[in-house]
Length: 367
Image (tube, rainbow, N blue to C red; front, side):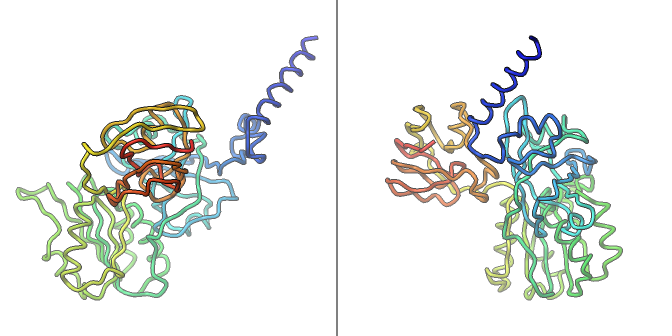
């Protein structure tokens, strides 16, 4: 009798899982996740193989994705999905290894800095252990290497080194013959991320020049200046790659433009979203999530994604920076302001990105 009862409960449970899921490939995920998390089909699972410290607040997580993961290009980002206290969270990080590591070893590396107040980065630093499984999205991003060899200049600040590490490893592995220079700005020598890897690349690759600039080690703070650029041979003819805090990238772009480096030869990627100057008093309003039959009020410059999550909704999201478009949703009425450009949308129906859309007055979203 007990066996019959247990079978009946199992059938009812399985039926509930089937009917509550829209994606047929994920029908058996609850069962598969118990048998082997790497067999889950709804997303690409990746097992944590190794974790090691880079600096006091930065760790590298080595992951082994399922073999069906399609791979990546040097300098691209990837979304990860991780469960914290029963809630799934999506975040975007740069891959810090070369594509050759994936092709040869079947592993990838994410080098992640702990962010003050950051829920996901702090949880990963404190709780993620080898053997854990998380979700991995397809790689994306236009911060990629040129096809043909040419002189390159990299300007990085802090954890902005991570996508550049991927590219430097790729270039060194391909024995890139054109000169490559990295200007890497950090607070102190102790804040150099992947120092061992960078100096190893410098030792084995003659075309590479590394200049680590510490901004707080001396009596006078050091910032990027024309003097640094003057030390780069043929800087005006180099293709330039920038990644770091917005202030550094803005300054680098300005200095390079003054030297005649054209916009099409400057490539930037952000590890935090740039933002336009907005007047918060003009923002906010009533937000109606039509499919959820929920209406909430908002004030100031809170984005629709934050508003939805505060209302206990769980919209799909990824980078939270307006890059990956995973949070794209249909606005059916009202006006939103793009927090990156400061531009207003039209008042009618259109597709918007929840993470960078701030309501300006009443807004209705198909969520």
